[in-house]
Length: 391
Image 1 (tube, rainbow, N blue to C red):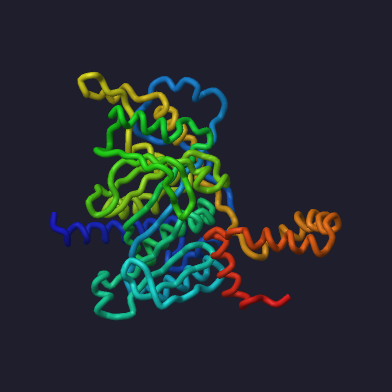
Image 2 (image 1 turned 30 degrees about the vertical axis):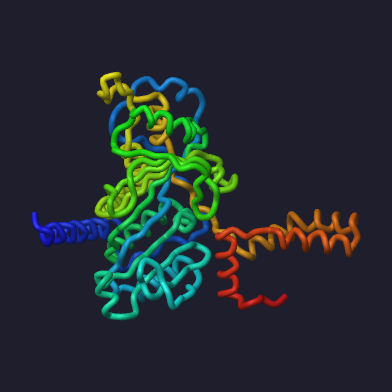
C-alpha cells in the first residue's frame, strides 16, 4: 500500500471515529464542552488486561498491592492553521493565559508556555522554516501537566486533540508505578544480564542517572532511543529518589516514538471509557517486554515466565489510572503557611527573640533551592499578578 493510501485510510478512520463519537455524546464534537479544569478527580476502577494468561502467582494474592498507571509525556504535531484554536482551547482548560516567548525548542522559532502545567506550544514565524516542519506546530505536555487531568477529562482531551486538531503523535510515555516495589532496578539488571527477556535486543544500566535535574539512582534501560531506535524504549528506576520522596515507587516507563507513538495515541484516544483506557495502557506497558527463563542452550520458553514479572503483569491488570491532582500555586502555599506553619514560626520567634529569629529564618530561606515546578508556579504568579505582587 502506498504512503498516500495509508494516509487516506487513517483520515477515513479518524472521520469514522469522529462520527461515532458524535453519536455517542449526542452532539457535534465541535460543540463539545472542553475537559474539566485541572483540579482533581476520581481514579478509574481496577480493570484486567488482556494478553497471555500467567501461571500460579504465589504471594501476589496475599493482601492487596498498590499501583498506578498513566501517561507521563505526550508530544506531537498539529496543522499550523489551527494554532489560534489550540491556544484558545488550552487557555480555557488551564484557566489562565500563556507566556509567549520569541524562541522555541526542536528548531521552532517561537513558543507559548502555560504555567505551571508544563504545556508548550511551539511554532515557526517564518514561512520557509514552517515548511521544514511540514507546516505544523508542536504540542508538548509533560507528566505534571497530564497528571492534573481526572481520568474522564484526560480521555475527552485526547479525543479532542485527535478530532478537533488532527493531532499526530510523535512521542508518548506510559508509566507504571509499583508502590510495593516487587523488584528493584539493580535486580532487574542482574536478570537482564542473564538474557532472560524478550521484546528488546539491547539492554544497559546507567549509574546515578538524573531526570529533570533530580537523582534517580540506577536506571535499567531496554532498547535504544533516537533515530537509530525501534520506536520503543523501556526504563526502570527508583521514582522515590527521582521525586525526592514524593512518589515512593519503582517506575516502569515505556517511551513510544515515531509511527508507534501515533498509533498508540490514536488507540488510547478512542478507548470506550476510563476503565478501557486503563486496560489499554496496562496492556501496552506489560506487552512491550517479557521476562522468561532461558535454558542452558540459549532457548527461551514463553511458558516459563519469571515470577516477579508474573506478579507485575497481574499488578498491571489491577492498576487504576492516576487520579488528577490539583497543581500547586503561590496562593495554596500561602494558605498552607498561614494555617499550618504560622503557629510554629511564632513559637520560634518568641523563643529566639526577634533579631536572632530574623537572622535564622533569612539564612534558611537563602539556602533553600526551588524545584523546576516551584519556579514555574512563581512565573505563573508573576504573569497573573505582576512583579512583585503588592501586599
